[in-house]
Amino acid sequence: MVSVPEPLRLRVQLTKTGMARYLSHAEFSRALMFAARRSRLPLAYAGEHRARMKLSLSPPIPIGVTSECELVDFELTGYVSPVEAQRALDEAFSGGIQVVRCRLMGSGEKPVGKLIDTARYLVMIPAGAGSREDWMRAVEEFKDKESVEFERVQPRRTRVVDLRPGVHELEVNGEGTGEAEEGSTTLLMTLDDGTAGTIKPWEVIEVIAGFAGVPRDSWELALVHRNGLFVRRSDKLVSPMELGRRKPAGSRRGGRSY
Image (cartoon, rainbow, N blue to C red):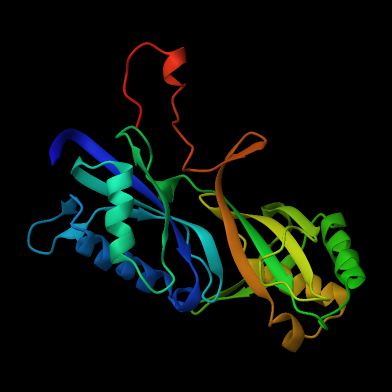
C-alpha cells in the first residue's frame, strides 16, 4: 500500500435493488460500512476510542425505491486503484447492493454529500391505475401551476411545502424501468434532492394522481426507481462521478489524472 500525504477519496456508485430497497438510510449506511471493512481497503477513521469511518453518502432514498446511482465517498489513508477497489468491494457487498463503478477523487473535491442537489426518477404506474391520457392531463395541470402546496407529515411536525419550484422535469412516458407491464404508464421526474432541498417522488405522485382522479390504493402500487443523481451547473446536470475530470493526456503537459 502506498501512503498518501493528503486525503484521497474513493467515490463509489452503487445499486440498491432487491431486498436492499427496504433498508432505511441508517441501515444502508451501516451495510456500506460493514462491507467496506470486509473489503480491507485502506479506510480512514476519525477518533481514537470509538473510531468512526470517514464517509459521505448521497441523499436518503425513500424505503422501497430502487436505485442504480447511490453514491458514497470513502476517505482513504493509502492509494488503491479503482479497479482493485471495485474488485474488493464486489466481493464484500451482497443482497441487492452492487458496485457500478469506482473513481478516485483528489483532496480538493467536495464530499459527495455536499454536492448533490438534483435527482431523477422513473415511476411505473401499474395498468388499471388511470389511463395514459389521465396522467398526461394531470401532469400538464401540475406544470401549469405556479404553486402546488402539499402537507408534509413528519414524526415531529407537519408543514405545508410548495412542490412546484423543486420539480424541474415531469413527463409522461420516459424510459421504461425494465419492469413495465402492458397498459402501464411511465413518468419521468427530475426533482430537487440534497443541498437545494428535497422534493420526494411520492409527494409528486400523490398530487398528480389527485389531479388524474386515481385512487390511492391504485397509485400506491407504483414502482419508483432512482436513475440519476446530479450537481446542477447552470442549465446542465453533471454526475458527481464526472466532476473534476481533467483534460485528456494529449491536451495537457504532465500531471496525474485519477
